[in-house]
Length: 285
Ligand code: PXL
Image 1 (tube, rainbow, N blue to C red):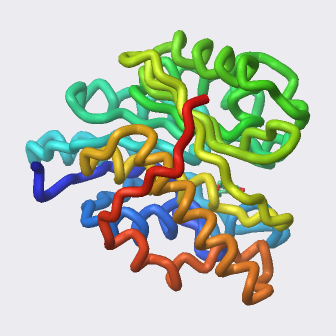
Image 2 (cartoon, helix red, strand yellow; image 1 turned 60 degrees about the horizontal axis):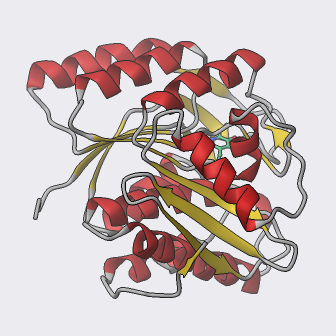
């Protein structure tokens, strides 16, 4: 067992609204994992609810930072990419991936949610995100992003199990052996769906939906999922841990009637991630 798991986290640093690195750092640290942030941009706040934000694109920082890590002989157990500020940053992520071929390569294809692209998601970024997905070992799109990656209309409507299995398999055929789609609506409820190509198994973890949208939940989910897999959990157990953490953090935040744009009150829930108790609320999809 590796006692010092090290992750290169290629995401933005947003001052307000708890998303990206401000979520990934505490969540993975609580799980005993070292996060080495590789910031793609600095923003005064995330782009979903604080008006005009101040943003500094750090595209010219990523490759020189990678060169430094290579000079140092640093090994990363995982390279984990998320929000990218320019299409050029896809090349930098691909460079990180190819520099650490033995690492667990995770791409959260941050582009859109609830059927709509984020303000920063240009058609070029959308096209090139498809390239990055092909090079990853695991991808964690939400339902909107999964449909966009397959060139389908990101319509929010109920989907059958066989439709979800087809999406998972088609995304996996692009390259990643593990695909997890968040926020699947079955018609009667919500669940997170996972597929492992190696075992050809499909999994689902249902959750109770709270009718408020908090930003950064995808970042929290993907970091707990990734951390759990890095610690040796199976895919359904890791999905279970990430889903349970999100349910706890969302319901905690809702109970305080906190402003949704401020994101989830994860500071109150980090102790959940320090434990290793295994949960088995997963189902076969
Ligand atoms: O959580 C996704 C995300 C990440 N980073 C920034 C964002 C968003 C979603 O709005 O604006 C800067």
